Image 1 (cartoon, one colour):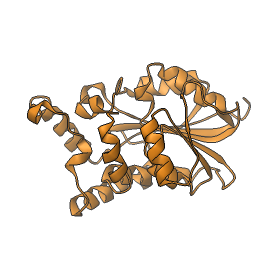
Image 2 (cartoon, one colour):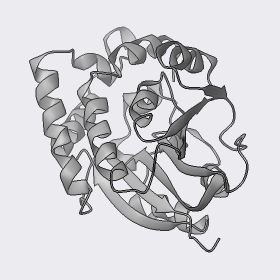
Image 3 (tube, helix red, strand yellow):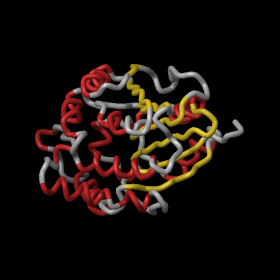
Length: 248
């Protein structure tokens, strides 16, 4: 991510409709898992820390991020331990973590398969990984450039990362389905409309706190009870909930 956007993310992560809607979906899934206050939860690529406070409701949380700026923001905003480290060599013992979350992380990693294999290594038998990525290569846009994404994913290749790592897929779905037509249209239009002064502007700067933001958050959150039970057929992002088999 561009350094100048960390400040923007830190300010809006707690209230922007995108983050609010996603957390509603994550909550609907986590409430169905067997995690307790004693469970060890690790959030990879924790960014500026808003999800750490959310995850702290479910267990003992540790954040990890490669970026010094992101780790600093996360430490300042939460009371959660935040480590600096490489997701390709996690500083956790094998079979020691109850839940690993990686929200829009592995698309930044050249060796995404190695990253998922490392997640599988640290999960205890029966432990879960909850991972999201941006969907559909044809939706590539300026937000991907700003965030230094390596790729957007097709469903088949995303699912293969988990099965090849020996994990069992428990839930595999798109999300941000309701707003998908609008987001897709905006992405396509921007391909033919140049940026002002050639400067990249984050999509998150388009929606400020207020009624529109609140409406979009509620609209996105409507997907939470659906995704807890069924897989949605299309969306801006992909989500995988995978489990390490008890026998491993």
